[in-house]
Image: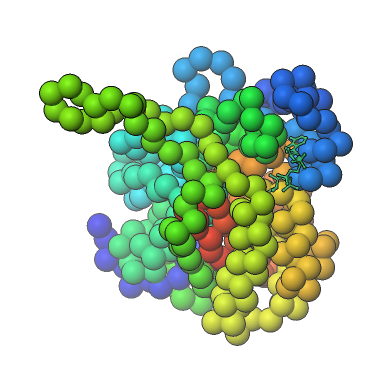
Length: 335
Ligand code: ACO
């Protein structure tokens, strides 16, 4: 641990990765009773990428996204002090970040997983910026990666149409306060409504005959879509408004609204509530579906590749999802 008297966070690079295999709405309609029209109208999603094949995991996607981010700035992985892997679909419940550390050869980095479903990337970014702004670490790799296809009930049409697999990475570094790009954040949790969206551990009916220990396994994602929808549309604008207020930033100052890519109707409804023009919304869920912790860094990386974002642009980023958790981080882009 180094002691640096820096108090800002600089974003050095981003990278992303999606599996090759694509699943269209028409293909899903051959598995469950649905249609391209229903899915597009209710969600905006047209297709999603799935991690197919044996022995492939979230680690494979996370590693590629991380290496792309490093490659863009010709940075050696040995410079990374900390890796935070935001994922709810780890390949090992004890954590998958250490395997990412080993595979990208970031041998000087501490690595841990952070679980907060679709808010995972926002929470990981905020966590990273705290380590940077306190001077504890100099360079941090944050990855949002999920393979919810492994936890989707492919016979449940109300959820299987939504999710896709992917990973996105961001490299952050401490800097002098005047170069700070992570302007502020606002985070929330409401555990009372955890059961609106969960991937729960399910016990077997009978315990171990001698020890009375109940064992079980994780099953499938279950979701009350309507409740999650109402929660997102009501709470995300409030989080954004609180964050803007704390920073003395107005709605008019916002250049881009980058929300967790859950449903195009949620994106539009949040923007409408805040009177943010639709052309400021970053959207790529039509091609990837809801990639959970990956969705924000994946959309940001694409927007940067497409040169949508300019120097000094203010980007309002909000994640929301299981927990329930939700939160906002506001950044100012520097090219
Ligand atoms: N195809 C056709 N019909 C369907 C499908 C489908 N895939 N799914 C549901 N239906 C039917 C229902 O059975 C219902 O029929 P009924 O009226 O005869 O009962 C009808 O369509 C309406 O269903 P609703 O669930 O009311 O549909 P809704 O308009 O609410 O859309 C949706 C469902 C898309 C899931 C929406 O509620 C939503 O997007 N919610 C938010 C989900 C979300 O953001 N989740 C991710 C959070 S991120 C995380 O943490 C992982």
